[in-house]
Amino acid sequence: VRPLVDKATIERNIESVETKGSAITVTPAIETVMVTDNGSINRILNRSECLMAKAPQSFKLDDILSVHDRSKAEGTHNFIDSASMMMHYGYTLYPVLGETENIKITTPSDYYMFTGIIKNRELGGLQDE
Image 1 (cartoon, helix red, strand yellow):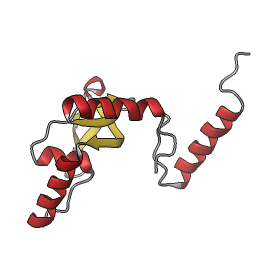
Image 2 (cartoon, rainbow, N blue to C red; image 1 turned 180 degrees about the vertical axis):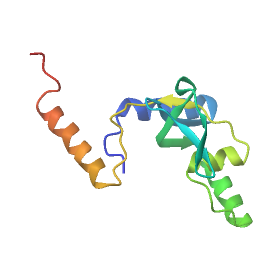
Image 3 (cartoon, one colour; image 1 turned 180 degrees about the horizontal axis):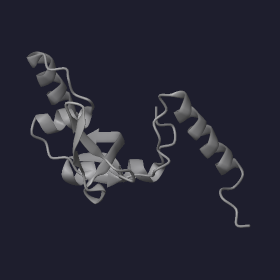
Image 4 (cartoon, rainbow, N blue to C red; image 1 turned 45 degrees about the vertical axis):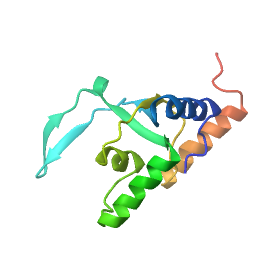
């Protein structure tokens, strides 16, 4: 679902897994993030402290298989992604900076953004006027 992931991001993920054990591709948060409770906003997070998780999320094979087995054995299936599962089972997660163009295509508007990026690349990127 992320067809625009670039080679450099994948290489940074591999390096991080080799040296630290994990790699979560992230981009800086560029919008305001609010936390709600019972229908009202109760906290606004400092954007400079927030990262947006993307894919790939990379781990040592034995580690990720182990937590999947534990999750299955415990009947715990409410994880939103591999990173949340790994964190739940005590693994440290390390961020790897990715490109903002590494968008996830799950809705029609995502597809329109994707086609816009591709068309822009075909035209040679933004041109100075």
